[in-house]
Length: 353
Image: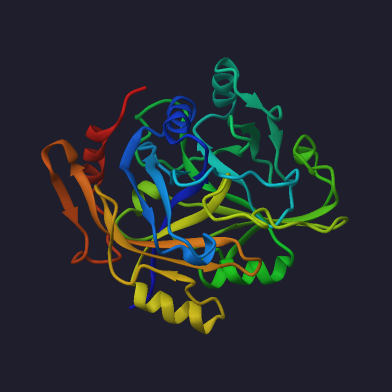
């Protein structure tokens, strides 16, 4: 069977204080639905944790309005490290997380009222889309972008979930091929070179660069496709400086955007596909991991510049957690979305501010 991608499940964010960060993301972005909240040992990530198991505390939080979630991730066995240099747009790796909103102007005013660190006014992308940038208390940059597709538009305020990422690459064409063949981003919304006005207030944003915005022509399928929705990936290649690797001399889980995760079905076929394209699994949980309230099978691959992409085949999720009611996904049609009413029952697990 073909690989089924439901969408971006979550952006992994390494931070110094998991509950402090989650409080900030709940207040400002509406990520108030915890799919799991667990302290444990990351014993399978040895290629990226200096060959040693590391203790951590992680919360997977969603915004039930629609879009991907955040895996808010904190080391507890060591002090998470920042980059030793000033990160700049075009450095290799995930530099920005895209967040969807129903109304760019209202989102801007809300974040202004909340006294967040807004990095720009409302600006325009090459395709005419209006957006702006905001920084969290830990130096992570988010791009707030208008979206017209929602799972539950009546829930919460104007902010939605994760829409995608801005990723620095060394070779645009090679990166485009990776994101097209493995992740289905086969549509080029724009591809332009130059100095871009909407980037000018970002670190390194005044440099000459090439940028390409990718989307997928086929709608996502699978259990969570209605909730996670469509997404975009923006690739950046800086032209007048040599980019650095964002996680150079650091561990996965250190401060910053640590991985981009996709919810999928048919892991065995994905393994064959990735191997045939020269991007074998570098980490494989082999069967099923247990995150307390959720379970599944996870793997990692690297894009051409070493940026970590995670795939999760979800086996179990909490529906009515308070009553111990969980949904087993193993025997469902892999292409079929869960009914809207069933996904909407997750709202009973939301955590108020």
